[in-house]
Amino acid sequence: MKVFRIMQAATGAILWIGSALDPLAALDAMARAAGFRDSTRIPSHLRAGGLHVEEVEV
Image (cartoon, rainbow, N blue to C red; front, side):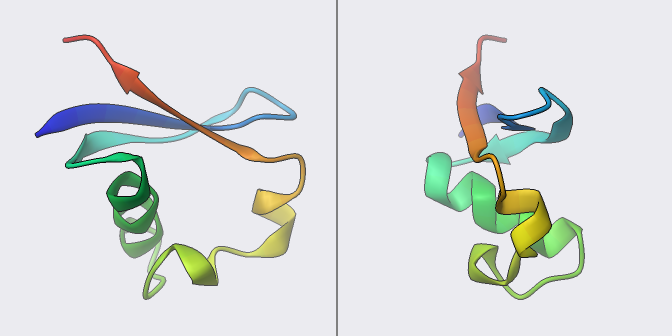
């Protein structure tokens, strides 16, 4: 597994850091940690301005 950081692109706010197989799995993991079923349920106000997923070197 790899470690990913998900940030709100417009503000630079870090929303989640954790391990996942790939960027899409990281978005789903962030959504589940926030109580949503998957990344398609992430509220539009968080998606506004874009979400940036990057792999973190450990």
